[in-house]
Image 1: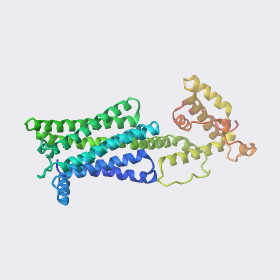
Image 2: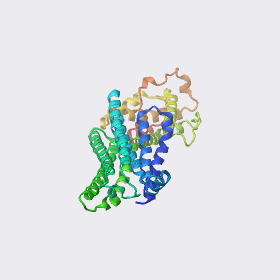
Image 3: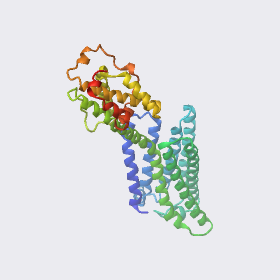
Image 4: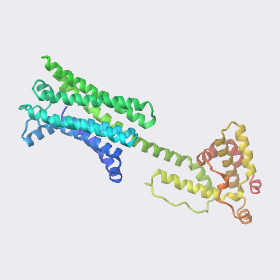
Length: 394
């Protein structure tokens, strides 16, 4: 793998981090959000500093051959820690237990990072190796222990994360489960990385040469693993918001039939408040619901409760459940009221009506079901076909 093979994933993860920074500024006290941002930062850092051009530049700037090795290994250990910490905070539980487990993981991997640096300082690695340091120095005292230490630490984190995510994924559904399964897949690649590295190192100890496993096979596995893990952690957050947006837009679209029916029945009524095209979907839904409620309220004097009762009985007789039957009955009463108002252009019924309530006595109406019933229910179609003279006298 060359520089772009590392820099492109680093840029992709960095972009994901940039998307999370505004939320972090607003809610910087949120431990889960902080954990996500730290994980993305470390993932991008591992890719960036593991790239051969970056390794060469760091070695040149510091003047120490192979100083990038403990740097990259330490970043990899820190990334493993951030994954474990995020998982602990993500699962939740008693706050004290969560803090205790988090401190243990951080303390354990802090020891690994300090030991990695100490072993590098004790060993000797004078010849710069940009891609094959693990196998080239696999038998060098202290450097050998440093290599084994970071691989063991990485394997422990991979196994722990795989077990935790698998257990949790069996108890959840939706985007969270998809994220957990993606993380598990990422850590399967991580375990593949560890296996190839260990195999190449053990082969060196046995006097054999399987360096290609470490040099050619392991890096792509690590890249795929880091990307999958980052996607898995971000997926439930982004997916949940996308689902909310999709649900809101679906509701907005489904309310369209009812909204247009009321607008057409009152062409000279108050115009709805205009909102900008970039307004969020939930705001558009709220505005549309408000317009619908206002339109229904204006029809109150024309409502025929007897017609609603008959429509409800017909819907129940046709096999509708109680919620659907109520929506069909409300929709039938509404179209009949629109017919009645159309037949009363001078507003005599409204003028003769007493002050009417806000509609609380009608109970909660399922506006979406009402809107769908306007288009699909034959009972509503029959009410729409009532003669306007008859509808004008509820």
